Amino acid sequence: MLLTELLPADRIRLPLQATDKSGVLKELVDFLVERSGGNAAEILAAVRDREAVLSTGIGFGIAIPHAKSPSAESLALVAGVASRPIPFEAIDGEPVRLFFLLIGPESAAGLHVKALSRIARVVRRESVREALLAAPTPEAFVRVIAAAED
Image (cartoon, rainbow, N blue to C red; front, top):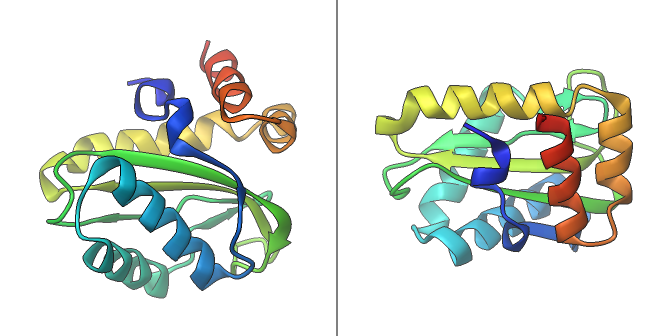
């Protein structure tokens, strides 16, 4: 599975408008539902429940909020970049600018884990993170992901 298969340019929001954690989660969920369908309130509740267990801020200015929801028909991914760092209770205590929201049904649990791993692997390199943050368009963002997956 390649991230570019799950993340075409129309699933990338540059820049995010929200200025706090709660707002970013809602904006990303609404954005995902516009593209993939599902019940926004149900998906947002699942994402918030997951965040309550442990922050999905993985460090280095990245968060990968994710959840399983019966409202999701299949695995869906959106991404966004915040203009300013957002406090997110990340494991390293640093604020976040780069967000990937992953939602899927229980039946896609294996693919869900693979996608999370793939995202983490792609963004682990500082040069990739910097290029994603600097991407001027969603298409440029996708090109960075595609190059990092090679």
